[in-house]
Amino acid sequence: MKPMFMGASTKQGYEIAAKSREIVRSLIDEKTRDLTPEERSIVERIVHSTADPEYADITRMSSDFVEKGLEAISEEKDILTDISMVKAGINKYSGSVKCCINDERTIKLAKQQEITRAAAAMEVAASDDFDGVVVIGNAPTALWKVIELVEAGSMDVKAVVGVPVGFVGAAESKKALHETSIPNLVTKGPKGGTPVAVAAVNSLINITR
Image 1: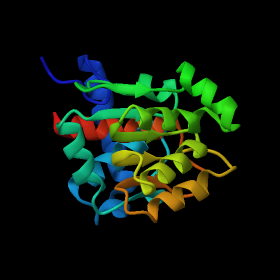
Image 2: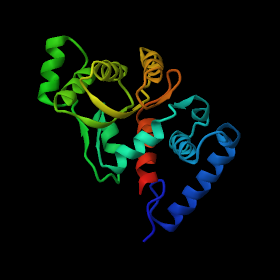
Image 3: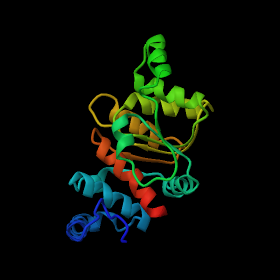
Image 4: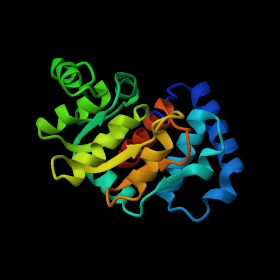
């Protein structure tokens, strides 16, 4: 049986996926020529998932993101997401995918500290000795919290996919992440979101298979 490709599992599905990938490559070929094969694969999947070639211009990866990300995925380290929708989109992973947004401790902590649940969820994960890859597609406050926790030595993070979407804090949080020593993938400006976050981490998972 053939492995799944971009979600395809039938002959027609494979044909559509192959044609789509061909189109994506033609649109972003010039923009991705300086990337490694792994980096190019990630960008291709993001563009394919969003139907937006601009992601080839605004996606940025630290020099160690692919190495550290693949290492963590290969070792089946935990994956932590900011919201349930991102968790639901991550597939074919043998390790554990976690989301603490609905944890009772998260809700209680958010009220006590008067912070967002997304930020509180990162604190809860850290208190549970999280060790792995963080994937944030929606909440800038979660990304700020991860940076804070890592820099304080309170959270063990191997790599971060930080692509929150929006006009309030998203661009700033991603810029701040990219300027840290944490292995990271970000998108410049307000663009991002669940499809981008899911595409990036699923691409890492696919590369390791």
